[in-house]
Image (cartoon, rainbow, N blue to C red):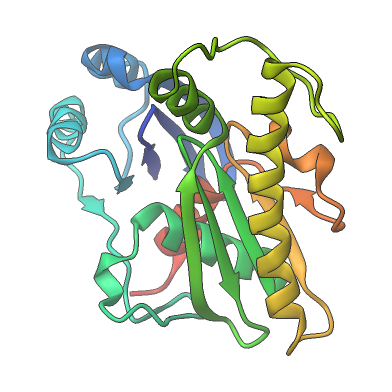
Length: 240
């Protein structure tokens, strides 16, 4: 199988054969026109599974890059129930395919209550019960997006690197500390809410910006790389 994760900023992919990942690569969405050349280096897959949250144009670009193969190409859509996870969204298909795949991966890894955090262009914070029920989740701007929005929308604020400080005494540190504390607060609040009804709650953190958040979480969180791709693998292995 070829697994493809089309995010808001990057496309990531990996080939899987008998549970072994090979040819794991990524490129920025602005370079999507080179994807066909990258895919030409791969062995012909038996099936392609895609999670896409970047819109129809990106989907068409990926389809064009896959045209060289005669195999099924499936774009994952969240379902009411799949791979042991129950979807509580009012309209199940409106849950982002990336969040759905990440929840399935988290359930496959932990088989228990989880708060699943994906740090990318946006930060998503999703709650999974001890019975495998997706209870709901949050979407907030990612760390970089929050910083850029402040710099763009506020006069006399320059986007300079800052450090996390308890009581920041310069603007760069004040912005960075505010952004990180806002993200941490959202994550830790969802953990606390889930902990009211569940004694053991796991926190899994994934995504390209995970290293900007994970070191400061007071909860015993763990980094799980490529949760979306891992969830696609579980979906692809599910008996039809």
